[in-house]
Image 1 (cartoon, rainbow, N blue to C red):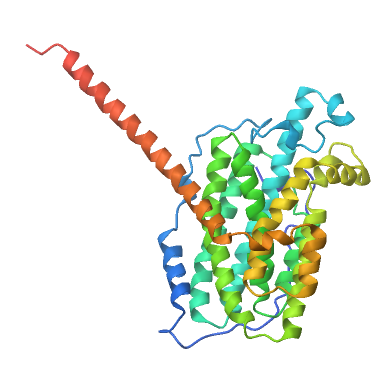
Image 2: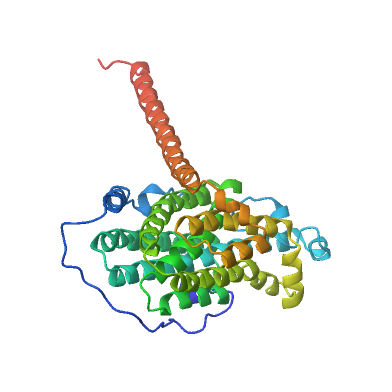
Length: 372
């Protein structure tokens, strides 16, 4: 079945074309590079994995409850609309929300793949080109995995959110080579990590937990890459250039905080846009998500050197200024450890199954009567 047959609303056109801007840069210095970045490149090579093999796609997913998260996480829970819904309606609502969330993950990962390719093209340093090439492969794998989950397990997709598409377009249209880093690695990836982590830590379903944990393990490297590259570069910029980038961050943060709330889902259930926005605004789950959204972004922005007075004031107004002191390295280490623990648990279970099979075979052999 074609992907277009699974969209709740047909996307605008079969492709989206963003005009290329900026220069492609070549480096003829092949034997030099930053030690930390080359070490990250080596880690990127070592940590490549196959989504067909590492993820257990035989695990079943209930289309009416793909994530198993509490009903309280649904915007309509506790409203008159919820009271009127049948069990089937509520199951369909869960399916739509999962489809909307994972569809945005899917579209975002394709955007990350394109941005990584743009970084390979535009960044002046060869060590950064090397690492970005591994990231483009990572993002391709993520898009493949999210697409498979939506096609095979959910059976429904949503078009890209207008505001996510707008931020992605702004990132790609900017001719400055550092903007794909800032827009994608810091803002969009930061948003994605918050959403991934919230679902990973609340879902009771093993398949989406595997998918999100393994994707987040890769993303921990990507964030480290963006921090290294931008921290080094922004030390060289003047006050005016830094303020331009801070304005971009402020605008992007407001856009993601205020307009990525799944209003499209409620509209598909017959709720008007304004009421859908109002209901989303009063959702306790969404308010918690907004707080967590900035847990990855604010400390990263501060770390790379974008911490001017206007940006600090914007974060105070958003109620997230205190997150600037969060330990981003600890968060990333936890993301990697969760994925590794899932691997250990799965390998241990497989080993127990093999031992049980061998033990059973031996027992059957001993119990069989001897010939002759």
